[in-house]
Image (cartoon, rainbow, N blue to C red; front, side, top):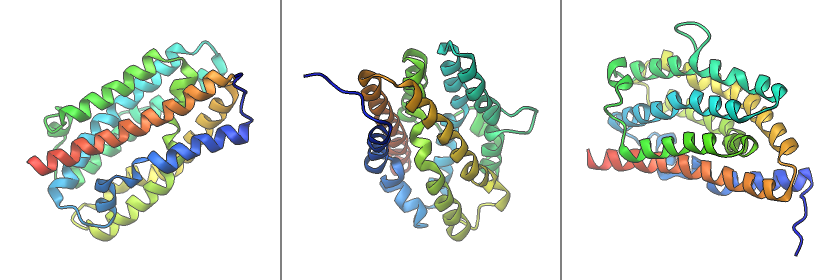
Length: 232
C-alpha cells in the first residue's frame, strides 16, 4: 500500500497530537511543582539537573547546523547558539539559568561541576545531542518542536514559582520570562522548517517519531530528578 504525503494541516495535527499526549507537562513532578508541593531540595535538584540540559542545547543546535547544507537554514538556526551561550559574557540563557540556581541558594561551582546531575539525566541529554548529530537535519529540527508547547508551560511555571516558592529570589525568574517570548519565536521557526523540508511520507513519519523521542527525553529527565529526590 502506497503511503501518501500528508498535507500541512494533517502533518501539523499529527505533531501537535504527540505533544498533547506525551509532553512532560503531564509528568507527576511537574504537576507537583506547579501546584507548589515541592520542598526546596526538590526545586534545587530540578534546577541543578536541568542545567545539564540547558548547557548542552548549543551543542545540539551546532550539530544541526553542521549537518545542514542550506545556507538560509543555517542563518535561521544560528541565533539559537548565542541565545543560550550569550553574545557577550554575562548574557544568554545558560547565564540566566545560573542566576536561577543562585537565587535558589546554590553556588555556581556546584552547578558547573555537575555534582548533582543524576546518571539517567546525563544519559537522556547525551542521547538527545547524539540524536541531533546522527539524524538528518530536518529530523533533528523536528525533535525541537517540543517548543510548540513550551510557552504555556513556562508561563504557568513562572506563576507557580512567584506564588508558591517565595524563598527563591525574584531575580532568578529572568530565564522563565525570556523563554515565554523566545520559545514562540523558536517554535515558529522550527515548525516552518519542518513543514517545508520534511517533504516525503518517510520524512514526515520520522519527524513525528523524532518529536516523540524528544518528549521521551524530557520525561526521562524528570524521572531521574524525581528518583534522585526520593533516594536523597
